Structure formats: C-alpha cells, structure tokens
Image (tube, rainbow, N blue to C red; front, side):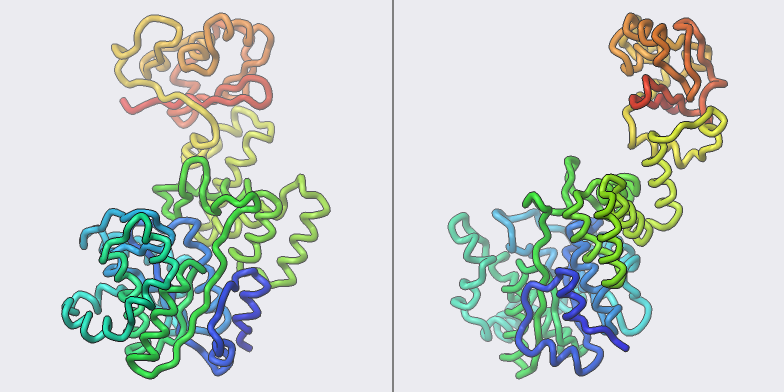
Length: 441
C-alpha cells in the first residue's frame, strides 16, 4: 500500500506550506511532482539534500519524481535569498554541471524506472524567442503580482536587474511546460521558493485553466540558528573531489544531539518507529554518539558506497585504538590517503637542493631514503618546535614512530621504515599524531 506523502512529510518535519487541495490530489493516485536544481556548480551540496530527500520520500510513497536541472534558468539567476547579482554561466559549463548533478541525484532517486526522470529546461527554452515569450507568457502575469513576491521585494533597495526580475516567469513556465507535456501536477521546493512555485500554478490556471499544486519544506538551520550544510571549510559538497567521503562522514558525525535527531528524520529512509527507537536508545547514553554514527554511516553509504564508509569509519576510529606496526602495514594505501585528512602532516620535497641547513628547513625524500635521525625528523617536519624539544620528548619516552616507542634521539629512520613506501606515522603521547608523506620523485 502506498504511503501518505503528507503524513510522511509532517512526522519528518519536512512540511512548511501546501496549496489547498493537494491532499486530495495525492490521494487519487500516483502524482508526478518535480523539484528544480541549480546547475551553477558541478556538484550539489548538503543544503540541496533536503530537496533530494523530498523527491526520495515522494518516490517511496508511490509517486513519480522528476528532477529538473535548470540549464536555462541557470543562465538567468534566481534572486531568491540573494543580495546581489551572481555570475552567469556559459552553455558548455552548464552542460557539464548537469551531467555531474544527474549522477549525484541517481544515488538517491531511481531515475531509470517507474517514470522518474531528469529533465533540463534548456531543452524547451532554447527554441523560444524573446518576443514569443513575453507575448504568450508575460501577458498573463502583472507587474504588481511579480513585485509582491518576497524574492523581488527584498531586492528593491539594493536593485534588481530585469534578468533576475523575470526569473519567476521563466521558472513558472517550466511548470506550465511540464504540466502540458508530462502531466506534472505538483512542484516542490524550499520555503524560499514559494513565490516562484505559485507563479507557476497561477500561470497554469490562467494559460490552460488547469489545476496544479505546491508543497514547500522549511529552510533547514542548526539548533544554534546557523545555516545547515556549512562547515568551517565552507560548503559540504556531494562530489568526492570537492568534499572527501571522510570529511562528508565527519560532518554528520559531528552534529549536535538536537541536530542529529532532526537529521535522522529528514535524511534517512528509516521508518518512523525505527527513527524513534534510535533516538530513544541514543538518549540513554548520548556520549556514545550512536545516533550520529548511524546517521553518518547511512547517508555516506548511499552517496559514496560501502567501501568509502568503511574507510571513513576506520580512519575515525584509528586514533582511539591501539595498534602495532604490523597492523599499520596491513592498512591499504586508500586508508592512508584518507588518514591524511584526519591529522596534520608534512610532505617531503623531492629535490634535496631545496632543503637548507637549519632546524626547521624541511626534509627531502633522499634524506629519508639515505637515513635521518628521529630527532631531526621531528624538528624539521615541524611536528615539534625545535631540536631541543624533540630531544626532551624522546628522553621522556613520549615519542613513537609507526607505533614503536623511540628511546634514542639519534635512532635512524630510512626507506625501509616507510609504510607502503610513502608514510611515517609520528606520535607524541596518546593523542598527538603527525603524518610524514614522501613527495613525488
């Protein structure tokens, strides 16, 4: 039996507004509904995941999701939530971005079955002339109607170009086209899109006498009021080249308890009973962070796959478990590449002539291959501040290399000590780690 989509949105905290009559529409059978995505970058980010999950839950409730990528509207620019004009994209860049975004959406939505699909509004806008558009579409919406939209009102003081002013007409016509050609009856989006979406429903009513509906989700913020999906390093992207699977996993792992409770409702496909049970279990021992771990594993697995989850979990747990040098050597190279993001480090220079004399002037690959003292390595890589500090740390027994304690500051390290031919793991005490990586020859 198909699930009640609106009920699903309500308990997940995903329903902000809906047009009257949408409940009756959904009850009549499978409905085609769409959400638009901005292709001005070659990757979506965590902020887009709310809308991706709207389509995911829509499909799970027996309806037919359509993802629209704005190859045409991306050339115009949506003024919603913007304080200034943005840089417009050329056609080749947009085409590349669309292909990348499709691959990301396919990780969450079945785009190959049940009628679900991805469409690009450039396909229908490329053949519409300006005069035809303002005659056939523009005459149906008054300037007063357009000026009343928040996305326009909020920009009147700073100024808004005709290009961005016209955006709501262009997006509204998307709905008209999909309504006519595919029978789409519903558009969804964030609450900041309500004005653009209802312009589409109004155009369908005025141009075709048709019925169309809108659903919006709340804009997601953290418990402290800051924007969800941001980190100290900026956006958390869905593309592994922009945000590594480890960093993506860590983003979810580091969410607060309050944010995690909200996130498991929105970003997982767990049933309501399971969500509530996991939250209750977490509340018994919140210091174990079982909810954050389950959330991080679930969403990283869907986006990046099982292998990347294993590496992210392994790297996250690595620094809290004892290990031997043999265990370190057993880790695959992929793990060490992930570990580079977990702890600070130093990459050797390839040319020995680039290394000057002095305590903190670097280390070359040749120096390690020929042998270098632990004391010199600690100081010259910057792990410790000076030769004298390195000497004291070794004498007090707090230094280990590749898990083996060092007792002699003149102990030599060479190429044979490199793990996988590339890495040395330095450690001071139980919690201070440093990774030395040899550069390319």
